[in-house]
Image (cartoon, rainbow, N blue to C red; front, side, top):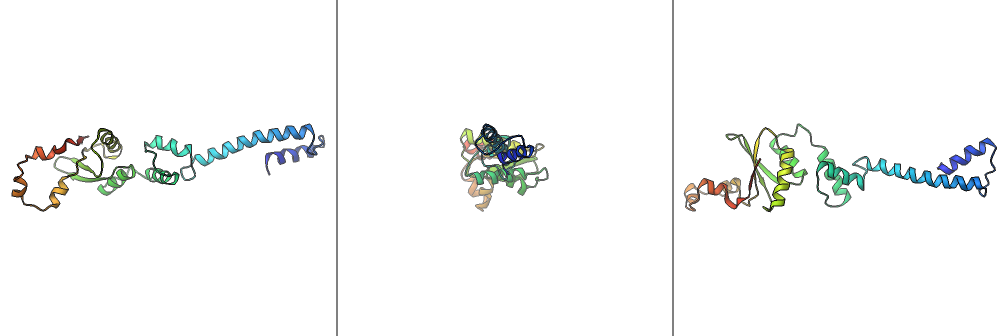
Length: 193
């Protein structure tokens, strides 16, 4: 039953009004019903936008701002990214969990642990070394990596893992004449946390 039908049935029950659809009271009730319909529609939209699973408009964009997630893709892709982001818990602290969490936040990265230096080495795969991309990755890393560990973000196309996988002997590497510091600072695309 809509608002107009509800008001008409309640007023007819009093026996005071003649409600045949053409009286001034009928017209006034129709105007009230239109105003109530606008309010009901706004409440229905608010209810829909209040939950990530059903939101399609401002509910998604507000949460993207809150969770610091970039708006990309269709509404469904954006909703899925927010649902995944909301599934991150304080128990997501293993290497695989951290890589998954970083990927949910939009950072494709591989993490290596340097237990001697108590540091994480994060190779940002496929990220460009321009300042905006590096600062965005730094912001994401600060949000999700363990606060008690220092981290090193590497935006170079080469990493120690790539070097190790070449399975070349030390003499081959040494023939290039690079120092360890020169290899570490190659490309000037490293950030420290």
